[in-house]
Image (tube, rainbow, N blue to C red):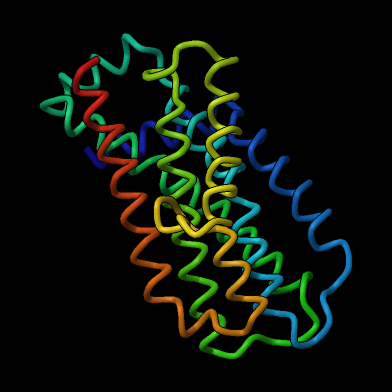
Length: 222
């Protein structure tokens, strides 16, 4: 399974699809951090970055999972000993690609996006939010991949609509039904992100677990 994960990452890089996600990430970061945020705004700015990178991560996860032809995917399942391992390898490869992009975005933000240095507590919270963003992007990208949505037009539309719905729901009192992205941002701006972090983390992990489980279940049925 680890070998298949490495194979899929290598295929993603060699297909040059990775550069699409990388260029999109760099364009987003150039706009988002075009000028340094003033001292004291580190938490809000870094949280905004973790939220806005999610659709790019979802795009990357979707592209990686779509790189392998359908026939090759079936052969991979046979080689690794079952559909479950093949699915897990794909998700692991997608998560690794998203994690690399998220780490790049966070490093850019820390070096070029803020004036002051965040406290250790804030930095830890932001790193955790970026990990949650990586999981969210992986789940959203998997749910809109070709194995579930064969039409490219429907797939990309579903990805963008999924992110928009996530934002809309997270702005309401029903924020606990999805990854509470706008609640992250509101908490960061209000200065109580650290206090609410356990609650927001639990809600986010619950949605990501449900999303990844749904993808695995649907893949087993197709």
